[in-house]
Length: 263
Image 1 (cartoon, rainbow, N blue to C red):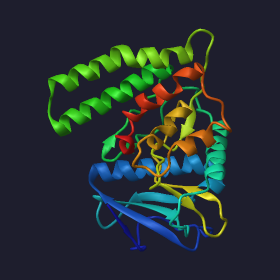
Image 2 (image 1 turned 90 degrees about the vertical axis):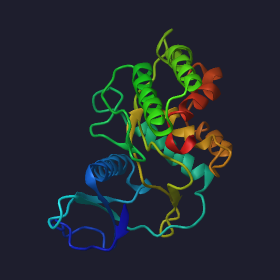
Image 3 (image 1 turned 180 degrees about the vertical axis):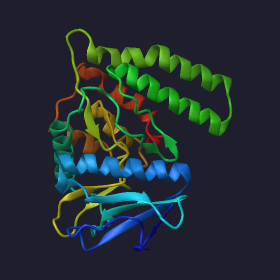
Image 4 (image 1 turned 45 degrees about the vertical axis):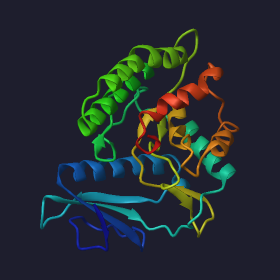
């Protein structure tokens, strides 16, 4: 994948596009899925909270080479620093609270990728069922990448049969209820900054799904990431912890298994 400067891609340039934009170019079927998913993800985020994202402009395929694909996005000049903790987490909470699944289900309307791997996006009624399918895909991809290991296979099976039901089933039983919310899907310190022109937080490089909003916080758990515990604490000043509240930290540890930047 590469970022280039406007080499005449195949699209009709509307009159109201930003004067400056970034073009990302990728090849093959994986590249096409990656850029399609990123465009649709950024569009979904921008539609809910436009001040929080660059404007996505278009995606498509080059006329000269049908194996090469592009994604155009508004150019935003950003700082090299992390965004303000309170401001960024307040906007993230606003994004989650203002967004809702178009059909009340968990998933997304197009495939989105974690790295080069498509994540699970099929529309699903239950969060436990959706996450189970999602984490199964992560385990399968990991085995393909690293090779089979009996101990790892046992741990994966116990995670699916014991840990997931124990931590996620209570979210939707006993009179409890959660709603699918639009999440960025890969929110770590490499995908957020501050817009120099507006001094507002900005997020980009999204891989969206409609999910339990707390899944968004998984990349903030690893100690190596600069966006950490203080950001999580600030987020929960704007959004209540899902019930049972006492399970929140364990849910976060479980969610880390499914997020590329958290493992």
